[in-house]
Length: 312
Image 1 (cartoon, rainbow, N blue to C red):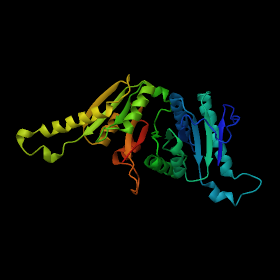
Image 2 (cartoon, rainbow, N blue to C red):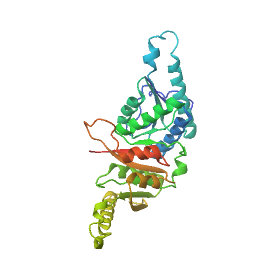
Image 3 (cartoon, rainbow, N blue to C red):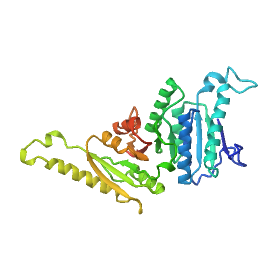
Image 4 (cartoon, rainbow, N blue to C red):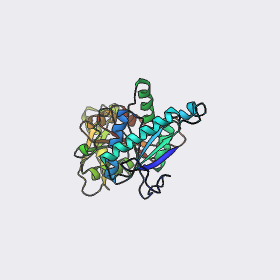
């Protein structure tokens, strides 16, 4: 393991070499692998950390020690360890050039990336990840890592889509979209989205998708349209409940849209600065802790996606 807090020069700060950063504010964590998409994710994370006023922690994880550690132990560091040092150093210097006053720490972990990042998320305000790696196989691997981290992390996970703009500042005028689930009461996703909108001074677009079951609309010709109206009214009530505690000063737009939630949110992500969805964590349940909606938008949204854990 290797951790340090760095200045723009890349030198450790006095008293901080052991990672004893100020714990008053949880850091934002970004996972890097040396690829250009991951460096763009680091740029985005730096903007986000500066916006929030929190430190940034740059993390690289790999299992190189399993393959190189014992065989190559001696006078020289294993190649992969040297490479890991280079990756986090380049990322840290890049973000400090972007935000010279930002507190940036780096950490190298010799373990599976998904496990390392999920654990890092336990002491983070949010995790930021890219979706693409250095080559074909690694690209698929990192896609699965991003998916696994979004499914299991205890904090919000922001996954940057492949064609994203790597400047948060360029997206501040764009709306923040949040998908409101079946119950809008005490939604962590809505709270997260509202705070992002406040920080960015951007509109908050709260979307509730609804559908009328086919059998409800064909019982009697005279009742055609009545079930649909009731479902839409329920959607409006859900939105009102979810947004009743929205911060003052946030420009909130409510939208109810008939259709599958995944398709509705993918459409809403066009031109947005951030799409926020919730994911319910169910202790003891096997498999990925992601619903179909979150899974779908992570793969196909037109903007960065934040997956926010919701209590079961």
